[in-house]
Image (cartoon, rainbow, N blue to C red; front, side, top):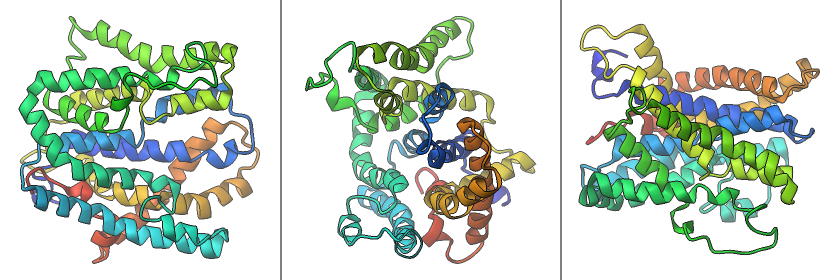
Length: 363
């Protein structure tokens, strides 16, 4: 990868892609162990910190693609081509895994494939494909309403992030309610948030404002999860329900962690790749970033068929789920990246790992 390949890319977005990819692996890595044991408090903290994972990808899409600067038809065609062809390829691969290795194939998998992923971890691609259909309309919206209008929408979305915590002390277990902010509780908020932070970075490290953000992030990342795990069980909430709340797609802890990670990386990463000889670190990040979509698509196959059996056979005595998560994710990342890197050098690259991570605004 030379200077020409780096031109137009944004270093901090490359860093965030890699971070998001690693977080996805960390979330999925210890699941085989969790199903056999009772989740510990350390694992609850683990989930609280890392559940933002795939949500960062939505934020990256908002930062990179909004506002849409080409025709709606061209935009939708190009973006769906990027995600759907690799999705089809990997869906076939996972179907073969279910048929020959897992031996749990059912014909309903084929019937539901247009709406529900064959492999559960691929849900993100299905949602992202629909987001691409909406982005041209959302683009016109953000241009029309301006910065203040976007802030207004994000405010309601932030309020909706408290919905997963409404049970227990607030309402009875069997009480059915229509939440007043329910219409905003969806992943489009992450797209808007990514767009907003990219164009209007938060003054996170200024003397005047740092304490305000520190309090806000402490509330979202620490206070609310502690409330869920410590206070809510006294009002009939089970541990599984608490886990469900903190890992909800739109929860205050995921929103706060996503904003924090985005802002910190944005502040400290280089503003652009050098016009001179690219730094070695920049080259490494770009190479990894290009393969992150492929890693996302293929990591469960590698984890399930290679890494988990290895962990069970060679490291059966490790009882700490968090430690297992880091070891498993690390091994999976190295193996999957090596495979995707090789594929990236072949003519099959576009069909297997797509071009989503090579997208440049306006092209």
